[in-house]
Image (cartoon, rainbow, N blue to C red; front, side, top):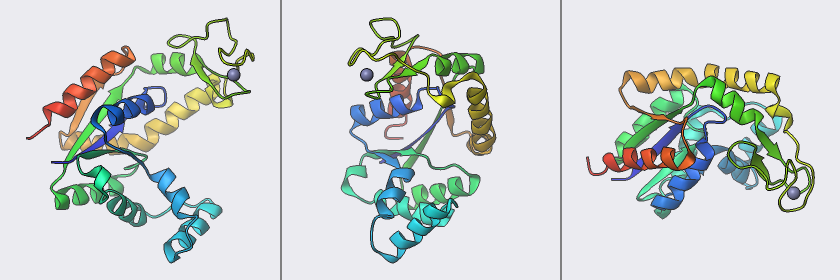
Length: 219
Ligand SMILES: [Zn+2]
């Protein structure tokens, strides 16, 4: 039975890294609605032109179109064993559409929340550095450069991204909280959320994720 993985977690919770690790371990693709929309907007089809117009105007693509896109994308062979959703569902309506899709296909939804205390999130995000020349990403706690604040690859002094400054971090966390709280609540009410303590090392968190995903195997 194919598994549909929905990872939730605030900025700095390590969701992106863990999604990549899951993808590698299980051989399941990461389906990013943002990437698909950008791809489709390049196609000269009625839907492609519609999406291009919506994206250009800064409006949001409708939930129905997003659900159709996911329905179409996940029919491909590479999704047969499972897939990881990225950027979907963001609203309760989207979550309901996903429920329907999962039910119709006889797939299994696995919702995992990577929980990290707010203080730790702020510290992690504030410790992030990027190389302005080559784009390499570091973290002064978990992945420091060999030499103090200099890029390992090109020796350039590292910088913080604009949105990794304290005020911007608080703002991002608030936006996340406000946007996703209803979706997490929706899944919690159905007792579908596996909570994982994301305050530990990347490897420990990944072990837990694998256990949760495998536990659901063959149920
Ligand atoms: Zn560099």
